[in-house]
Length: 181
Image 1 (cartoon, rainbow, N blue to C red):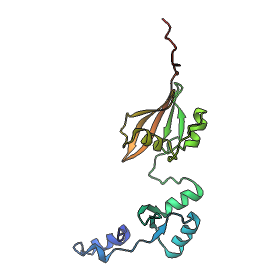
Image 2 (image 1 turned 90 degrees about the vertical axis):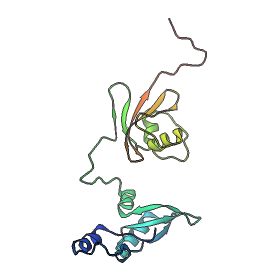
Image 3 (image 1 turned 30 degrees about the vertical axis):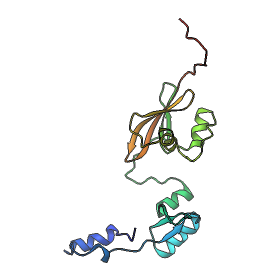
Image 4 (image 1 turned 135 degrees about the horizontal axis):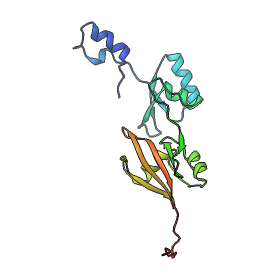
């Protein structure tokens, strides 16, 4: 990435009839920040420099991601929903012993919900756990058993992110146990 063009800069330019001008003339540089930078420290830098976003660089110099001012504020004070986001419950019972949940539900909250410790590594959310178990980008309807008797099924996707899941508990049949006739 070499820069960013904001809609605020682009629209007046287009309205003036200069649609054929090079994008470079409107482009602003994007700061690079190390992945180890503290959120509060970066937020202060954003405020002082009137920046809205930065590229996060890992220890090898590769791009680790993009961070926005909204990401930083949410990290510090919690989730912020804008006026266009529909309010959905984070997790609610389905009436049949399972739950409908947000794909961003934390593993910690999920473990509390199912009253089990999963010993997961490398994931922070239920959606991330499904990605890890599948080993590919999930599709609506995909299901994984995360521990014997607990299944997570993808209910809704937003682009490549798991938006909603259904969590179900099933009876666990012990090895060697026979079904009754």
